[in-house]
Image 1: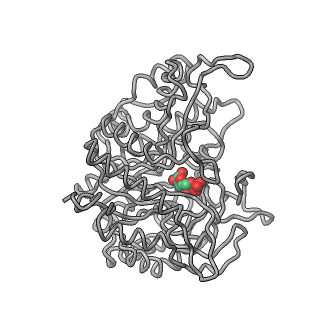
Image 2: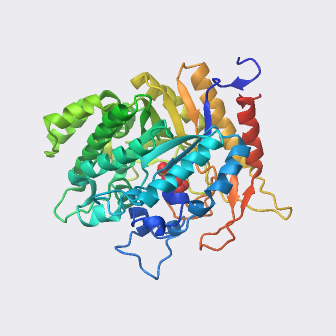
Image 3: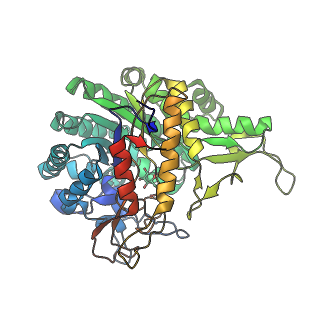
Length: 482
Ligand code: BG6
C-alpha cells in the first residue's frame, strides 16, 4: 500500500545506529583490554585527533567514558522502544571479548555483557544488527603484530568472529564484518588507516602497497568469517559495510568523467570482492603497473569465492566532486586517480563542510544495486550539527528533521522508481555519541540528546529532541505522509 504517501515495505527495518567505542565507555571495565579507539585524543573542527602510543595523562580521551552506555543501556533501550525502533545497530567491542586479541580464551565477562545487551533489545522487540569490527581492534594486535598487514590477524579475527557468532547464534541474525572498510583507501590518511587496520608502518614501506595488503587480509578474514557464520546458523544474514560517498565529475569533460570513475573504483574494489568473491581486473592491473607484491594464496582466493555477502550495508552522508581542469597555473591533471576533489557549487554544507545531497543517496543506491543485485541496508545516515537546549528545555532540531526527511524521501524513490531492494534504515548516532572524526561530543547526530560537552563535562542526562517525535511518527506510519 503506497497510496497514502511514501510508505515502505511492511517488514522494513527502521532503526538507529551507533558503535561500541562511541557510546559504551567502560574502557577498562569487565576485563576489557585497550582498543585502538582508546588511544584517540579529542579534537575539533580545526584540530585533528592525535593517536598516542600509550594513554598519556595530559590528554583527554573522549571514548574512555563516551556516553556511558555500558552502564546505562537499559535506560537507553527504553527510549529506543518508545521511539519505535525495530532494529538497533551497534558493534561488539573486540577487546571486550579478546582483551589482547591473541588470548587463548575469550573473556567471559565481556561475552556476558553482550548477552545481556542483546536480551534487553530482543525483550523490547528490537532486532540487533551487529558489526564485528568498528574501529575497535585490540591495541596489542598493533603493538605485537603490526596490525592487519600481518596475516596472523586473519586468524585472530576469524576466531573472534566464530566465538561471538556461536555465542549469539540465537540472538543476532544480522551481522556485518568490517565497518567502512573502504575508507582507508581514500587518502591513506593516518586516522583511517589506524581505525580500519591498525597498521604499524616501517619507514621503508610503501603506504599504499601495505594498506592494500592489509585490506586484502581483512577481505579474506571477512570471507572466512562469513563461511563459518553460515555453518553456525544458515539463517544468518551477513553483510559488508561500505562508506559510499559517490564521486561526481565536476564538469562534463571526459577527463573528469574518467577520474570520477577511477575514484569510484577505490570504493567498488572492496564491494567487488565482498560480493563477487574475485579481485577485480582494474585492481590487478594497478598492482602490476605499480609493481606491488600483494600476497594471497590459492586457498585464500577460494575463501573469497565461498564467503560472499548476503547484503550490502552502507553509510551515506554526502557526495563529492572531482576535477582535472587546469589549475590557476594552467596545469591539467591527466593522471586520473590524482584528480582534485572540489566543492560542489550546487550543494550546501553542514558546519563541518560535509556537502548535503539527498539525491546522491538515490543515485548511489541505484548504482550499487544495479552493479550487484543484492539487498541494500542503509546502516548510517545523519546530520552532525550543534544543538541548543532552549530555556523550555527543548531541542528544536528542525534542520535534522529536514535532512532525514529528504533522505527518506529519496530512499522511497529508489525503491519505487528504481526498483532497489532496500531492507532497512538505521540513522547514525540515534543518540548523541562521540564523533569519530573529530572526537567531539558537540557534533551531534542524535534524536536523543546527551548532556555532555567537548571537554567531558555534563550530567549525561538523556533528553528527547523534536526529531525524536518526528521519527517516532515516521516509524509508526511506516514512511512519510506527504
Ligand atoms: C562513519 C563512521 O565514518 O561516519 C562512524 O562509521 C562515524 O563511526 C560517522 O561516527 C560520522 O562521522 P563523524 O566523524 O561525524 O563522527
